[in-house]
Length: 149
Image (cartoon, rainbow, N blue to C red; front, side, top):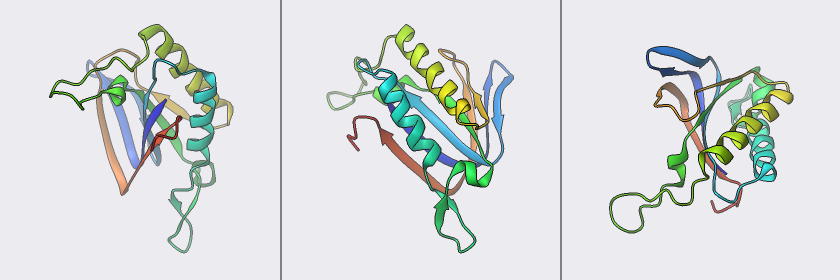
């Protein structure tokens, strides 16, 4: 699994004019599921993201986690994180999971984060979405369950 994690002061997702998920201070997580991914990868990324210390403490140092600042998550599925453009100019998405597998792991990831006691809003799986955010910092972290980066 891959995630782009952005620290935000606010973010929201809209589908066909309807706001499907919205948060104030917290993390926007763009989540991609790879073909070989399992719940093990989802557990790894959920734990990593929940524990990321990327919020500033009283001294201005990034030292606090999402729970410590009372923040929320907005999780948006994004298969294009598995786009491979190394050959040619049209990305291949062969490494992305099939929709059924991706949906199951995306939903499992969201349930896992909620079970950790965090508020978690979502987009709509397999829909065209408009994502709006104010990246605070800016702070953007790339995560890969295979630790490729």
